[in-house]
Image 1 (cartoon, helix red, strand yellow):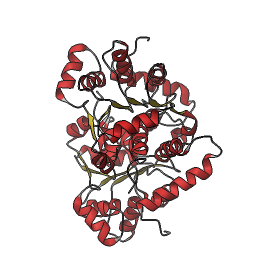
Image 2 (cartoon, rainbow over the protein chains, first blue to last red):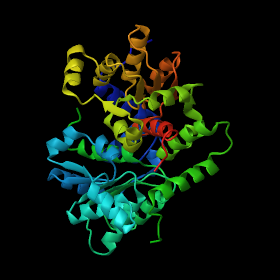
Image 3 (cartoon, helix red, strand yellow):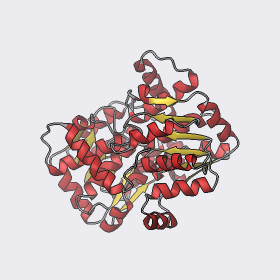
Image 4 (cartoon, helix red, strand yellow):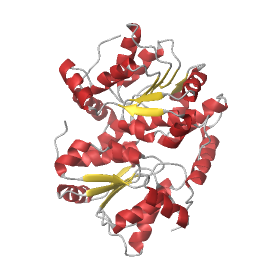
Length: 209
Length: 209
């Protein structure tokens, strides 16, 4: 068995070099590129180069919210787990996921909605500004509904639900809104991709280590 | 905005139907197919049809360990988060991830190894039989080293480290061992894929709900 790199940061730096070499020509600026590369890094799938949509002004909007210390909503505990806790702490940010809460399960059952939908309602009531969706199309549809009803006014959204039923449509729908966002178009995305996008944003403010 | 399916199990059933229709001809048996479909479900990436390797006898070996109630080692908190807690509970199983433990960080720093390598050493000392790798090639290399030294004798391994540096090689190396395993060949894999494989195995024993 050959020797292997045992330094995690060394592995990450080398990985990003390989991604840069293999991804070919592009027109991303430096900050956009750091987001794209991190989604490829977390999936080993170069298709992310073509399906990540970064709305103009979205990065600045996200960073401004992160800088002041914010509560980040996530729709899954996997996304929550994947978000770098050290960077969160330095920024004075917090990350929450309500889907496993007993009151959320109760509300969902009583009203015949998903737990993710109930969770997004609670986050909106709490005034959360920074939303991260890696799994639940229903939650992203619900956020749009709450916006159309004038009840929600998010400052930034990562829209990356994954899957074969509703995921692509949920992202098409949220893109119709005038709102700073980063989405993953089509079926792909997921909790690890959503977390990677948040981490890429935080690493623009906090040195990676 | 069109109406949308709000029943999570309905979404999953429909998703699996779509995956079955689109994945085309194959020679998987029913149990293998359930694993393959779940990896595609969690990535929206049909390449998993071609890169998931299920060793003969591996499914039975995994189920026999799960049935008796076991401690499952995972290399990331994301994989841990993605493993279905209800199914674990019914099976009397538990899932652990040691990478964030303070003693693990201390050992890693003192010895110049990764936290994942230190974590796998602890799991081996504890007699863990069921290993799940979704991220760390170094941990999978370390498990092979411990096997070659006669210190580790795992009963089943999910080998799905993802990435550009060492991931593919780590899986090639573990495949050389005579050991029940499911791996994801090449660069792809990841915590969500590793968790999906474990869930697919548990759902062979515990009804999905």
